[in-house]
Every structure is written in structure tokens, then in C-alpha cells.
Image 1: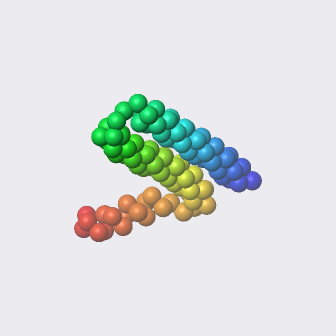
Image 2: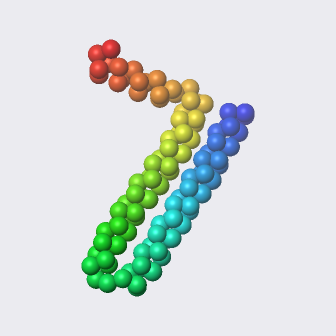
Image 3: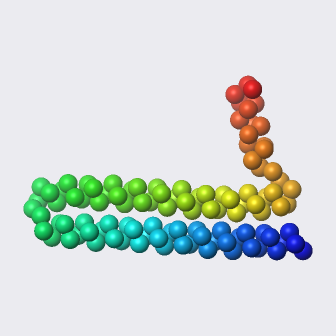
Length: 103
């Protein structure tokens, strides 16, 4: 009974932090787009192209960071769930890497 409770609590916490992280990163992306739109309204054509490239780079960075954060949260929750069920995936992965490297 206690194992199921811990799994449920871990899943809820993981989902809450994951959703919060996604919302925060989308907010950052929205702010970057608003700032870019303001700059585009004030500056000429050459600067517009430069600002578009900068905006694209910012969007790509934000998407990568959000992917990493969400992936880390989901991975932590899955690792907890697997360890509570007696599956220690981290040791299996490290052993496979060590065998591949010949250690």
C-alpha cells in the first residue's frame, strides 16, 4: 500500500513540476516574441532580418531547454516508479556502458 502511495505522490509531483516548467518556458518564449515584435516595428529592413534570426535562435534555445527540463522530470518519475517495482534501470545502463567500453 505504501509503495503505491509513494508512486502516486511521485507521479503527481513530477507532473506538476513538468507542467509548471513548460508553462514558464512558454511564457519566456512569448516574452521574447513580444520584444522582437516591438523591435521590428521600430527598426528598418536590414535590422529586421537580424532580429528575426535572433528570435529564431531564442525560440530554438527555449524549446531545447524545455525539452531537457521536461525529459529530466519524466525520467526521474519513471526511475522512481521502476525502482519501487524492483527494476533498477540505472545500474543496468551503467553495466551495459561498462561492458561496451571493456571496463
